Image 1: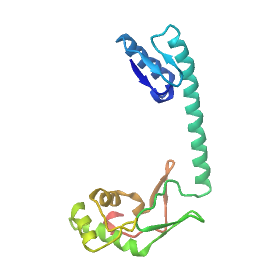
Image 2: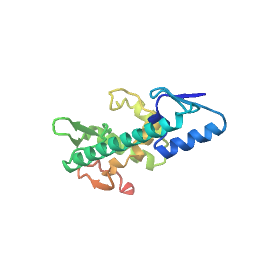
Image 3: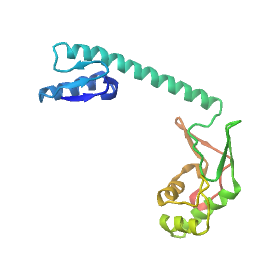
Image 4: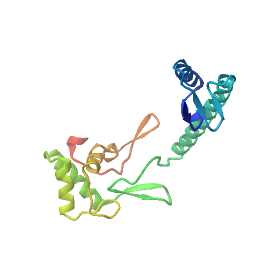
Length: 180
């Protein structure tokens, strides 16, 4: 027997739920849904599962629509969505805007220049620590995955994906023309 927390955590929709349950039942494996107290090998298990799974699917779809509407409203108001404090930028909570932090922007340009010169992310991270350069948390601690994340981050070119459109931000950190 397999135990799962709830139907909504088991599968995305009613069809998938029933297909998986039937596939497992054919192998004599029961699923017990704790929240709904349903055992798939019980007499009424599949009937209850179908009803409860349909309700769970409807709830997920409704929640998804609410989240999408909220994001669309924020986009219409021009609010930033998903900005998590990129190095080289300052986020202003009072008006939900960003500005280039020139001191950090110089470091971003240096990282891109070093990468274009052929230095790897390990070497770049070591060099930043040798120079005593602090990260966004104020620590002299740099890691290869963080440096690579900066190099791959399209926000440094001014591209921010909102919905299905790209918005160009005029306040970008100008980097080497090869990256444009």
